[in-house]
Length: 229
Image (cartoon, rainbow, N blue to C red; front, top):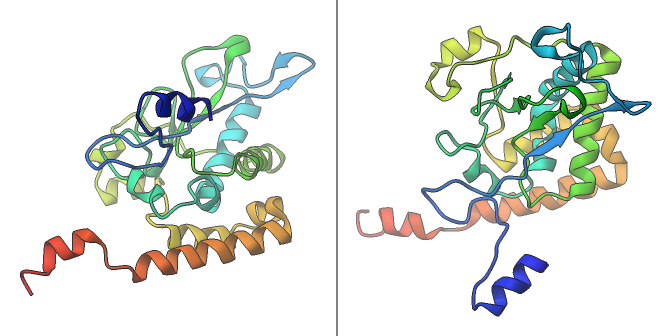
Protein backbone atom coordinates (compact mmCIF):
# COMPACT_ATOMS: atom_id res chain seq x y z
CA UNK A 1 0.00 0.00 0.00
CA UNK A 2 2.86 2.37 0.83
CA UNK A 3 4.61 1.59 -2.46
CA UNK A 4 1.45 2.09 -4.51
CA UNK A 5 0.58 5.32 -2.68
CA UNK A 6 4.08 6.73 -3.29
CA UNK A 7 3.85 5.72 -6.95
CA UNK A 8 0.43 7.37 -7.44
CA UNK A 9 1.73 10.63 -6.00
CA UNK A 10 4.28 10.65 -8.81
CA UNK A 11 1.81 9.74 -11.53
CA UNK A 12 2.99 6.12 -11.66
CA UNK A 13 1.49 2.71 -10.94
CA UNK A 14 3.32 0.12 -8.81
CA UNK A 15 2.47 -3.48 -9.65
CA UNK A 16 3.44 -6.70 -7.92
CA UNK A 17 2.24 -8.77 -10.87
CA UNK A 18 4.66 -11.72 -11.29
CA UNK A 19 5.56 -10.99 -14.93
CA UNK A 20 4.27 -7.60 -16.08
CA UNK A 21 6.87 -6.99 -18.81
CA UNK A 22 8.18 -9.45 -21.37
CA UNK A 23 11.95 -9.72 -21.76
CA UNK A 24 13.01 -8.73 -18.25
CA UNK A 25 13.03 -10.50 -14.88
CA UNK A 26 9.68 -10.88 -13.17
CA UNK A 27 8.77 -10.02 -9.59
CA UNK A 28 9.63 -12.77 -7.12
CA UNK A 29 8.95 -13.24 -3.43
CA UNK A 30 12.01 -15.24 -2.45
CA UNK A 31 11.45 -16.50 1.06
CA UNK A 32 14.16 -17.13 3.66
CA UNK A 33 13.50 -19.65 6.43
CA UNK A 34 15.39 -20.81 9.49
CA UNK A 35 14.51 -22.74 12.64
CA UNK A 36 15.62 -22.11 16.21
CA UNK A 37 15.52 -24.16 19.38
CA UNK A 38 16.13 -22.29 22.66
CA UNK A 39 17.53 -19.35 20.72
CA UNK A 40 19.99 -21.48 18.73
CA UNK A 41 19.81 -21.82 14.95
CA UNK A 42 19.37 -25.56 14.40
CA UNK A 43 20.21 -25.33 10.69
CA UNK A 44 23.86 -24.67 11.54
CA UNK A 45 26.41 -27.39 12.19
CA UNK A 46 30.09 -26.43 11.79
CA UNK A 47 30.99 -30.10 11.27
CA UNK A 48 28.34 -30.83 8.62
CA UNK A 49 28.69 -30.69 4.86
CA UNK A 50 28.45 -27.03 3.82
CA UNK A 51 28.18 -26.39 7.61
CA UNK A 52 24.55 -27.52 7.48
CA UNK A 53 22.93 -29.69 10.14
CA UNK A 54 21.00 -32.87 9.52
CA UNK A 55 17.84 -30.90 10.35
CA UNK A 56 18.67 -28.35 7.63
CA UNK A 57 19.37 -31.11 5.13
CA UNK A 58 16.06 -32.83 5.85
CA UNK A 59 14.20 -29.49 5.75
CA UNK A 60 15.62 -28.96 2.25
CA UNK A 61 14.58 -32.51 1.37
CA UNK A 62 11.01 -31.71 2.37
CA UNK A 63 10.96 -28.53 0.29
CA UNK A 64 12.27 -30.47 -2.69
CA UNK A 65 9.74 -33.30 -2.29
CA UNK A 66 6.76 -30.96 -2.10
CA UNK A 67 8.01 -28.27 -4.50
CA UNK A 68 5.62 -29.20 -7.31
CA UNK A 69 2.70 -29.75 -4.94
CA UNK A 70 3.02 -26.33 -3.33
CA UNK A 71 3.59 -24.35 -6.54
CA UNK A 72 -0.10 -23.62 -7.18
CA UNK A 73 -0.16 -21.90 -3.76
CA UNK A 74 3.16 -20.06 -4.05
CA UNK A 75 2.53 -19.11 -7.70
CA UNK A 76 -1.25 -18.78 -8.00
CA UNK A 77 -1.83 -16.87 -11.25
CA UNK A 78 -1.76 -17.90 -14.89
CA UNK A 79 0.74 -15.06 -15.26
CA UNK A 80 2.99 -16.59 -12.56
CA UNK A 81 4.20 -19.18 -15.06
CA UNK A 82 5.42 -16.51 -17.48
CA UNK A 83 8.01 -15.73 -14.78
CA UNK A 84 9.05 -19.34 -14.18
CA UNK A 85 10.94 -19.72 -17.47
CA UNK A 86 14.68 -20.16 -18.16
CA UNK A 87 16.92 -17.12 -18.39
CA UNK A 88 15.31 -14.67 -15.97
CA UNK A 89 16.75 -15.64 -12.54
CA UNK A 90 13.58 -17.50 -11.57
CA UNK A 91 13.82 -21.24 -10.85
CA UNK A 92 12.36 -23.72 -13.30
CA UNK A 93 13.75 -26.94 -11.84
CA UNK A 94 13.63 -28.51 -8.38
CA UNK A 95 17.29 -28.48 -7.38
CA UNK A 96 19.26 -27.01 -4.49
CA UNK A 97 22.68 -25.50 -3.98
CA UNK A 98 24.72 -23.31 -1.67
CA UNK A 99 25.60 -20.90 -4.46
CA UNK A 100 23.73 -21.73 -7.68
CA UNK A 101 21.24 -19.00 -8.62
CA UNK A 102 19.45 -21.25 -11.11
CA UNK A 103 18.31 -23.58 -8.30
CA UNK A 104 14.95 -23.66 -6.54
CA UNK A 105 16.45 -23.83 -3.05
CA UNK A 106 19.60 -21.86 -2.22
CA UNK A 107 21.53 -21.70 1.03
CA UNK A 108 23.03 -18.19 1.37
CA UNK A 109 26.68 -17.92 2.44
CA UNK A 110 26.09 -16.66 6.00
CA UNK A 111 26.50 -19.29 8.74
CA UNK A 112 26.09 -19.47 12.49
CA UNK A 113 22.94 -17.75 13.68
CA UNK A 114 22.26 -16.50 10.13
CA UNK A 115 22.13 -19.95 8.51
CA UNK A 116 18.97 -20.10 6.45
CA UNK A 117 17.31 -21.65 3.44
CA UNK A 118 16.00 -19.52 0.56
CA UNK A 119 13.05 -20.78 -1.47
CA UNK A 120 13.14 -18.88 -4.75
CA UNK A 121 9.97 -19.65 -6.71
CA UNK A 122 7.16 -17.91 -4.72
CA UNK A 123 5.84 -14.68 -6.19
CA UNK A 124 4.04 -11.70 -4.62
CA UNK A 125 0.63 -12.69 -6.01
CA UNK A 126 0.37 -15.49 -3.45
CA UNK A 127 -1.68 -15.41 -0.28
CA UNK A 128 1.17 -15.24 2.27
CA UNK A 129 -0.79 -17.04 4.98
CA UNK A 130 -1.36 -20.06 2.73
CA UNK A 131 2.08 -19.89 1.10
CA UNK A 132 4.06 -19.66 4.35
CA UNK A 133 1.98 -22.50 5.82
CA UNK A 134 2.70 -24.93 2.96
CA UNK A 135 6.37 -23.94 2.80
CA UNK A 136 6.92 -24.55 6.49
CA UNK A 137 4.87 -27.75 6.55
CA UNK A 138 6.85 -29.11 3.60
CA UNK A 139 10.13 -28.46 5.39
CA UNK A 140 8.83 -29.93 8.65
CA UNK A 141 7.66 -33.04 6.80
CA UNK A 142 11.22 -33.38 5.57
CA UNK A 143 12.47 -33.29 9.17
CA UNK A 144 9.79 -35.65 10.51
CA UNK A 145 10.18 -38.12 7.63
CA UNK A 146 13.99 -37.71 7.45
CA UNK A 147 13.85 -36.94 3.73
CA UNK A 148 17.30 -36.74 2.19
CA UNK A 149 17.65 -34.18 -0.60
CA UNK A 150 19.49 -35.09 -3.81
CA UNK A 151 23.10 -33.90 -4.07
CA UNK A 152 23.58 -30.15 -4.37
CA UNK A 153 23.78 -28.92 -7.96
CA UNK A 154 26.45 -26.42 -9.00
CA UNK A 155 26.00 -26.54 -12.78
CA UNK A 156 23.89 -24.03 -14.66
CA UNK A 157 20.70 -26.09 -14.69
CA UNK A 158 19.27 -24.16 -17.64
CA UNK A 159 22.21 -25.39 -19.75
CA UNK A 160 21.72 -29.09 -18.92
CA UNK A 161 20.00 -31.44 -21.32
CA UNK A 162 16.85 -33.35 -20.36
CA UNK A 163 18.95 -36.51 -20.01
CA UNK A 164 21.51 -34.75 -17.79
CA UNK A 165 18.78 -33.34 -15.54
CA UNK A 166 17.17 -36.77 -15.26
CA UNK A 167 20.49 -38.35 -14.28
CA UNK A 168 20.80 -35.80 -11.46
CA UNK A 169 17.22 -36.38 -10.31
CA UNK A 170 16.20 -32.81 -11.16
CA UNK A 171 12.46 -32.44 -11.70
CA UNK A 172 10.84 -29.58 -13.61
CA UNK A 173 8.40 -27.34 -11.76
CA UNK A 174 4.86 -27.08 -13.18
CA UNK A 175 4.80 -25.07 -16.39
CA UNK A 176 1.26 -23.73 -16.09
CA UNK A 177 -1.42 -23.03 -13.51
CA UNK A 178 -3.37 -26.05 -14.79
CA UNK A 179 -0.40 -28.36 -14.22
CA UNK A 180 0.28 -26.83 -10.81
CA UNK A 181 -3.29 -27.49 -9.66
CA UNK A 182 -2.95 -31.12 -10.78
CA UNK A 183 0.25 -31.46 -8.73
CA UNK A 184 -1.41 -29.82 -5.73
CA UNK A 185 -4.23 -32.36 -5.75
CA UNK A 186 -1.67 -35.21 -5.60
CA UNK A 187 0.30 -33.85 -2.62
CA UNK A 188 -1.36 -35.06 0.58
CA UNK A 189 0.84 -32.95 2.88
CA UNK A 190 0.02 -29.70 1.06
CA UNK A 191 -3.67 -30.59 0.81
CA UNK A 192 -3.78 -31.43 4.53
CA UNK A 193 -2.02 -28.16 5.39
CA UNK A 194 -4.60 -26.11 3.52
CA UNK A 195 -7.49 -27.99 5.10
CA UNK A 196 -10.62 -29.12 3.22
CA UNK A 197 -12.36 -25.72 3.12
CA UNK A 198 -9.40 -23.72 1.78
CA UNK A 199 -8.30 -26.53 -0.54
CA UNK A 200 -11.70 -27.01 -2.19
CA UNK A 201 -12.34 -23.30 -2.69
CA UNK A 202 -8.78 -22.63 -3.87
CA UNK A 203 -8.91 -25.40 -6.48
CA UNK A 204 -12.36 -24.27 -7.64
CA UNK A 205 -11.20 -20.66 -8.05
CA UNK A 206 -7.98 -21.61 -9.86
CA UNK A 207 -9.81 -24.00 -12.19
CA UNK A 208 -12.22 -21.22 -13.17
CA UNK A 209 -9.31 -18.81 -13.64
CA UNK A 210 -7.46 -21.26 -15.91
CA UNK A 211 -10.58 -22.00 -17.97
CA UNK A 212 -11.11 -18.28 -18.54
CA UNK A 213 -7.45 -17.81 -19.50
CA UNK A 214 -7.26 -20.77 -21.88
CA UNK A 215 -10.45 -19.83 -23.74
CA UNK A 216 -9.43 -16.21 -24.34
CA UNK A 217 -7.98 -15.10 -27.67
CA UNK A 218 -4.92 -13.06 -26.72
CA UNK A 219 -3.35 -10.18 -28.61
CA UNK A 220 -0.27 -12.27 -29.41
CA UNK A 221 -2.44 -14.78 -31.26
CA UNK A 222 -4.07 -12.03 -33.30
CA UNK A 223 -0.71 -10.45 -34.13
CA UNK A 224 0.81 -13.83 -35.00
CA UNK A 225 -1.99 -15.48 -36.95
CA UNK A 226 -4.78 -13.12 -38.05
CA UNK A 227 -3.10 -11.87 -41.21
CA UNK A 228 -1.46 -15.21 -42.04
CA UNK A 229 -4.37 -17.67 -41.92
